[in-house]
Amino acid sequence: MCLAMSRNKIIVGLEVGTSKVTVAVCASNPGGTPQLLGVGNAVSNGVREGEIVDFAAATACIKEALADAEEKADVKIQSVFLSVTGDHITGFNSRGCVNLPADRNKIADEDCEDVAISARDVDIPRQAVFLHSVLQKYRVDGQYGISNPVGMRGRKLEADFHIVQATGNRVKNAIRCVKEIGIEIEDVIFAGLASAQMMVTPHQKEMGALVLDIGGGTTDFVLYLDGEVHKCGVLPVGGNQITDDISQRLRISMDQAENMKIGEGSALLEVKGLSKEISIPPQGNFPGGAVDRIILNKIIRLRMQEALASIARSLSNDHDLTFLNAGVFITGGTSQLTGLDKLAEEIFELPVHLSPWNGVSVPGSFVENPIFSTVLGLIQFDNATIGSDPSKPNPFLGRLLRFMRYNW
Image (cartoon, rainbow, N blue to C red; front, top):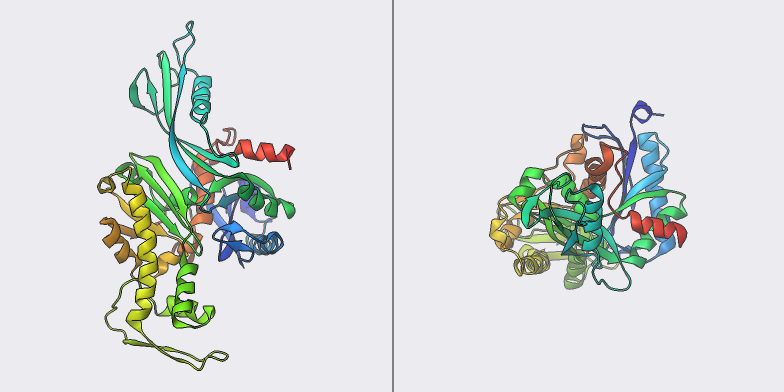
């Protein structure tokens, strides 16, 4: 057993993605940087657009990734922080309000709890559950911008929250796959928020930032204004859709299309210094051939242009994106696509950054690979919320997990 385990709490992040299942094992360092002990991987099966579609296949992949992580980290995994994604996950802003009793005018902890409950007292779809209640700011007697009102004097306490909701059964399916293996769930976290923990600093959140995690089957987005989450969601588009487009348009196999996308493709129509034609090697009954590079790049560009423009339109309906002074931060496996940052700059008209990670002590090979941003973000998410104070209750999703213990 590793020495880090004997000294520090072990934190495990689990991401069940469309293309891969990844497990990260870290040793917590209260007040410091978590240390990565090992990462396990498995090819994902039974998952489409971030959601479980084949329970047995998905469970087998999760089991394989967990075993790989245990071997590499030399620990026995007992519980995990689980990320979830899918276009059923949405966010909205809500304000809670409580009036202090007539015999008291000093705000207490229970008033903060009550105002959070008040903010969640909204109508949501029957099958939906609350994933997160992310605090923005408090108001005391109309005074806005208060971060901690406890101890202040006032008669009326209000608080703005960003509420993240999801379809309950889809979240439960992911939880069931993990519990089937005998692993407990510490918490369930929206993948976009986990990735954002790795991508942007508190200062960048204050400046205004948009985080995009573009994976195999989904694109998660989180918008920060004045240090607060103001909008988030999921678009069911990722790298797999690009591969499918290439396969259908060029009438080649998915394997060939994936290789072309990774090895030759770009979100820019023309790339200087490269040949105008791309050779396609023979495979099976396919005799081989060639394709114009601009045709390939146009297929890629159209798909990503559609996805990014859709997010830009959705956000600009309620927010002025010119105030995002920190810019756009892109991560996830598909962020490695050549020219994607340039395309995003055109669409958002903002500076674009790729994978400027912070907050977790990891070897350089992991830092250079954005496919690990979500799973390492789960570690950083825990460290930022409860890692430095184990006695502090986790404010996220405890309600759903408690419900499932008694209603499994």
